[in-house]
Image (cartoon, rainbow, N blue to C red):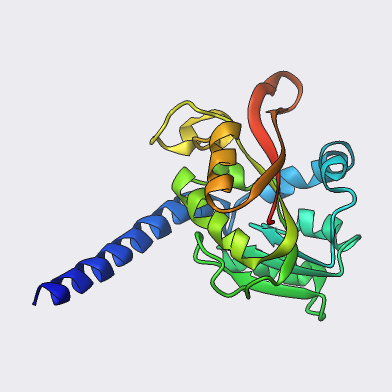
Length: 230
């Protein structure tokens, strides 16, 4: 009967892991759900961020099928729609996906996927050419990022790229991310790169960046990483 006990332990262990990841995902996703004023405040800055920070990193990549991971209310998706063939918009909050749908429509170019917050279970293997995430993953718990990266590897077609804006704040490990500057979770450029490599992804470029405006700028608070699936 030992094999039955082993199977039970494996099953309950996996269930416990999933429950823990779901809880961590909700911690960072719930504050940006219904009623959040964040999106209206962030919207005016996307044009400048796109032209000065984002586009120089992703210019020349394959935009045939792009995933916007943690799309929010779609301010990044609108910019991606100018260059992408098709976009998969992914978010943990259904009200965010509805806001994106109202903004972009339901045409064949756009697919809306509600995630559990730590996997991409409803996205087919090797189905996207670029995974993009900007101004969202900075809030994700490290274990959530560790769970997402193998999923990103799975959904990318060979030779596809990922572009992620993540935290570079190493203070407050294990604490509430809302106690950190700009609500940054525990992460570093180096740790993110190690997680990429452990997931079979090749880091092409990674750099720390400052974040904030006017007198609220925090140097090297965030990181940008461009990676590739071999």
